[in-house]
Amino acid sequence: MDRRVHRLVLPEDGYEWKKYGQKFIKNIRKFRSYFKCQESSCMAKKRAEWCTSDPTNVRIVYDGVHSHTHHGSSPSSADQPRRGSSNTSSNGNQYNLLTQVFGDQSSNAPPASRRN
DNA sequence: CGTATTTGACCAGCGC
DNA sequence: GCGCTGGTCAAATACG
Image (cartoon, rainbow, N blue to C red):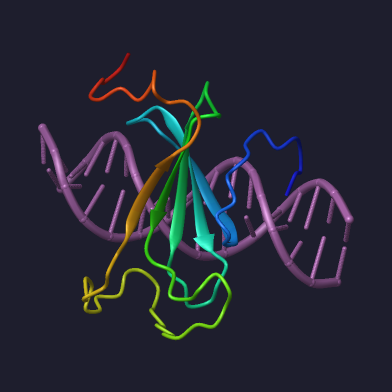
């Protein structure tokens, strides 16, 4: 919630996300927020990265697929254990990965620049 | 009081 | 083998 002034406005996707972490990635020199789907059996996750000086350019990365429609109803109750279990790992899961870039990153996004 | 959000610490995988 | 990074969870805090 807005404990203070919300300095970052994330685009609503129609789903509910719960922030479970935030870290500064040195590799890209950007902040990264980790969001998880509020749904129960929804293993869909969302990552938001933005420049430290350009919070307007937010790159939303959707990791995983929504086992439920944004309406509700969870057909497949895929109950998966915590990470660390040596289960079948990469089962035939159709893992979607969407990367959406918001804001004006045309003059930004260096291809392969390490350190200024 | 309950819920949502925040920050820190811990763990695992990879590189050298 | 060790160090580093990235990722996740837990606890504490704040607001309604």
